[in-house]
Every structure is written in structure tokens, then in C-alpha cells.
Image (cartoon, rainbow, N blue to C red; front, side):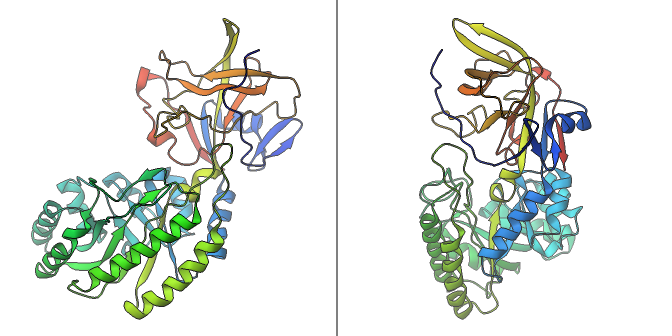
Length: 411
């Protein structure tokens, strides 16, 4: 038997009933029958509610929690979060339509991202959504469209700081970036915003994501507020909002530890005190995506075939990278690691083997688990990939090879 290339990690402690994984109080096989197909994504609404409550318990009450819809734009999930959090952050016109369908006050919705189209800018102005400006071109377009509509646009300035969030999975600031306005150009652009008569709301400074190191997050937040303080000296009006970004990560792989919120909350409390003295009435925002929904989701596919090729076991499923690009290792991983994965209807089986779980795409990239020690599986068994609530379906090439899409449910 081949040795496993990567050991599995036990991340979520799921309830098990009669040897079967129970998700959101429903045995897995029954959930599959209820949905009526595999593959599918399922998201646990109670888990999302608990995660927001966990944040509220550990962060100062004055911190505003926003959801970055790009993490998971499933409409029912976005609707659920609209009653739990303080605002939405968008990255497209499609996400804006989702947000506007909820009960979230439009004053608490902002739109970031490079390359906004004229139509998106125009729609945001008409709706009253705050546009996070990322270039002088966007500023000019915003002024033009506001004049045509007879509406004063609500804007914030997105900054590309000269620092980055250390140890982050994706670095969104520091060095040359397509995101935001370089820190050294920000004061001039703030003056332009003032001279053009726009309704300046504040600053958006997002330096990185997927971070499990609280000290790195604390340092980035400290640097963010120091930068905001410097820029305030040249702002045409008092700032109303500072979006500190997010960066809060979740554990995926062996050795990962859950993020400790306690020191972050203590540090933010200190920052709030100093921020209030510098910027009376300022609102500090944390923009979170993956941290709110990532651990609340699973992806489930079914074993269609089992074969042995030159001594290695392959479980061929009806899922694949076209549904879950991140689990295949092709969404930001430099060295591929297995997501936490189990055979959901064999949770208590002792007989095990090393197997590779693949999809049915004609590409060697279509690997969901590479040489992983798993219970001995058979055709018809259900493969469960955990930590699948963020950057799953919407971040995957669903049109590849024209297979049908998976279902999505909020339970």
C-alpha cells in the first residue's frame, strides 16, 4: 500500500449517528435524498449565526462587522447574514443586486474592486451605495455619472498601503498592486474628491486575507489607523468610516490552529479609544468573508467508480475541480495540500486504505484528495469536503466540460 502524501486534518467535530456524518442535524444520506442529487454544497445557518455571535463576544461592541459577499454569494446565505451583521461589501454589480434585495440599509453597503464599469458606477450612485474609488479614472467617471444623474455620489478612497499583512494567504496591499490608490498618491486624490464636491465617507485599507496569526493582524490594524491619521490631515472633510479590511483566516490543513480573537479584540478596544479622540464619531469596520462562512459549509459528491492503477486506489466521483477549484489546489496554493475530507457514510469504519479522490474531468488537475488515508470506500459512498463555505462554487470553472452544476442549500 502506498503511503499517504498528506494526512487528513480533523477540523470540524461533526456529530456522527449510526456511522454517518450528521450535518445541521440531518444525517448525510437523508440530506442527499432531501436535496435530490449529488454533488451539492450545504451551508449550516446555525453555524453562521454562532460565528457572528463569537465575533460579537470577542470584539468591542463599537466595531462594525461587514460581510464581503465575494466569499459566498448564495442568495439565501446573504439574506440570512443581512439580519446578523452591520453591512455588506461588494465587488461587482451582480453582488450589488444581491445586497439591494436584502433589508440591509444602503448606507451600510460599499462597492470595491478595480475596473468598475460605467454601468456599475451609475447603478451604485443611483442606489446610494458607497463607491470605493481605486483610481483617478474611476473618480472622473464617478463625477461624470453623478452629474448626469443629478445625484452627489457617496465615495470612499481605497488605499494601497506601503505595508502588507504578514503571513497572509493573499496579499492585497504593499508593493505594486491593481487594488486602490498608492498611499503616496492618496492625499492628492483626497483633495480632488473635496474640490469636486463628492460625499466623502472615509477610507478603505485592505492589506491581506486568510491569516491565522493574531499578532500580524494587530500590527496591520495599527499601521492602518496610523496611515488614516496621516491622511486625515489632508482630507477635505472629517472621515466618517475607516474600513480596516479583514484578514481573519480559518484552519484548513494539519498544523493550522483557529484564530485567537482575544488579543485582537483587546487591541481594537485600545484603537477605538485613540481613534475616537482623533476622529470624533468615526466608525471602524471589519470586512470579513471567509471567516464568517468558510467553516459552515460542506461539499458532497458520490463515488461513481473505484479502480486500482499500478497499485494506487482511485475513487472517481461525480464532483471535481469544476465545482470546487480550491479543494483541487488550483486556487492560490503554491504547494498542493488536501482539504479536510471524509467518507461521510463510513465515519466509524476502522478498515482504511490510501486513496486518491478525483472527479470525472479529463485533466490530471482534477484531484480532490491526493493519496489520503480514508475508510475503505465503495461505489455509491458519499465524499465530504469540509471548510467549503467560502470560495467554493462561485470561484470554480463550472462550465468546464459542460457537466451539470451542483446544488446549493442553506439548512
